[in-house]
Image (cartoon, rainbow, N blue to C red; front, side, top):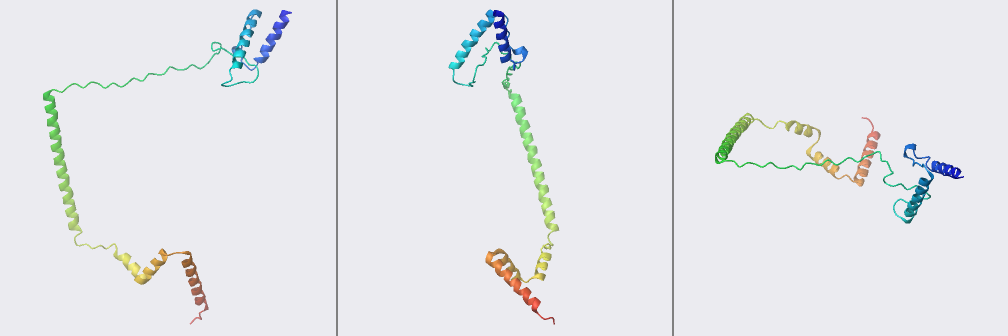
Length: 192
């Protein structure tokens, strides 16, 4: 009779654990161990039922201990970053300090010479350009002024500019009416 009960229990466990892969299923070997495990499972169920925080599942489920769970992923240890340590500078001797000072003065003198040469060269370029452009007039604007004067008088230019600036809804309607009446007058004229 005990054998029949054990087989039924194993079937129940197999049914409960059917979704768990075979290598992760709990192993049931003897009746005494299974009874002990059931007692441990019941105690664990009672403890988990008392806890009402976190993820709460409905129904019976198997609570596993940390030791029984096999985690295929292992956390990698953090690499320690070495802190940069500034190397100590050695003290310069009096001779080395004097040599560096002389180098700096020579470099400053050389930069001053280069700067004065550049200033002289640019001044000569400006003088030559002024001599070349001395007798020339501003010819670029003359054609623009001629084209504007040939099409409209100054008064007409000012009026058109004022109209462009003062475009309102009333002005555009009035302007449209003027254009329409001008077209009608033009079409009604008798050819001469």
